[in-house]
Amino acid sequence: MREFDYQRAQDVSGAVALLGADPEARFLGGGTNLVDLMKSGVERPGRLVDVRELPLDRIESTAAGGLRIGATVTNSDLAAHPEVRRRYPALTQAVLAGASGQLRNMATVGGNLLQRTRCGYFADVAKPCNKRVPGSGCPAVEGEHRNHAILGASGHCVAVHPSDMGVALAAFDAVVEYETESGPGELALTDFYLPVGDTPHLETALPPGALVTAVTLPPAPAAASRYRKVRERASYAFAIGSVAAALDIQGGVVREARLALGAVASRPWRAHAAEALLTGGPADATAYAAAADAELAAAQPLPDNGYKVTLLRNLIVAVLTELTEEAAR
Ligand SMILES: Cc1cc2nc3c(=O)[nH]c(=O)nc-3n(C[C@H](O)[C@H](O)[C@H](O)COP(=O)(O)OP(=O)(O)OC[C@H]3O[C@@H](n4cnc5c(N)ncnc54)[C@H](O)[C@@H]3O)c2cc1C
Ligand code: SF4
Image 1 (cartoon, protein in one colour):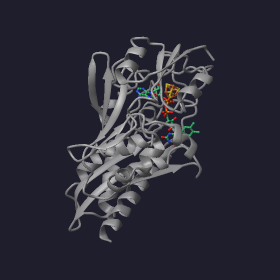
Image 2: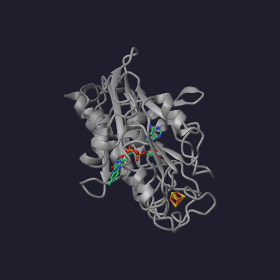
Image 3: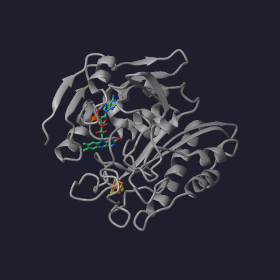
């Protein structure tokens, strides 16, 4: 591992100044992803700016009726927060479906959104990878891609974003707040991650050196919400497909639908086509299957990950049906 300097920031402006414009410096959250990548040589920062002592570890109600979640809130504290559990249950479920208890105790909200892909070629510095070394190629397209993207990918990269939390945040219309040397800014979570195109190494719309300071949630939807994840083993493993959904049903008609998919694209995938079809339609399995088909019509599976189309279709119908049954109780 390359030698690096370590500094602990005490306030937000200090953290941003410490990172400065140094392209070789990185913020350190819980370190559960970054340190692994440093050990494997994928990341070789010359300086780490530890953000864990910043006063960003609180979850507060906003004047608008939502929640503001500080960027250094741990995944465990986020999942356990009474207002998150009560108003945004899919978020608690998503966070608890991720990693292990020990990891969630360390991992932060900011770090979770900015964790890197689990593509095996990305993690292996002996292999080419456009995301790690732009222009070197994407061996996953013709190689191992069982867990890779079916939506929004390009021939330059077919990796998926691994965050469970991000999928629920996308369904809840979360906004990411950040701070730079020239002032604060914010991005809707759905605009936070860049399309892959021919620049898979450019992953987010954050300005260089930006510190994520918080994630803000607007008021929760009236309806119940749910997150369901499919993985290859029951203990901690990344998703091969997941769904975050909320449905407001009145008189057998869907008044409002929120739907986001995970492990299908380079970012949490907000299912706008499905939502449009669901809204105003009947609250039944036929309509849910039609909505799933509408969203997945854009899927471009590779030879070994076509199963994800069927998996996601079934998962969407199952989660929406569960929410419908819950609403009827
Ligand atoms: C065995 C294992 C299983 C896992 N399973 C899952 C899973 O099932 N689902 C899931 O979602 N995740 C899973 N994870 C990933 C885990 O959730 C992430 O490693 C964790 O959330 C990252 O948070 P962190 O605070 O440790 O980030 P770090 O490792 O500290 O940082 C990650 C990245 O974010 C940047 N960063 C950190 N904080 C900020 C900030 N405030 N502003 C700007 N940049 C910042 C860092 O510079 C770095 O680039 C797993 C990890 C492991 C090791
Ligand atoms: S899918 Fe993306 S991360 Fe994986 S090898 Fe290809 S370019 Fe690299």
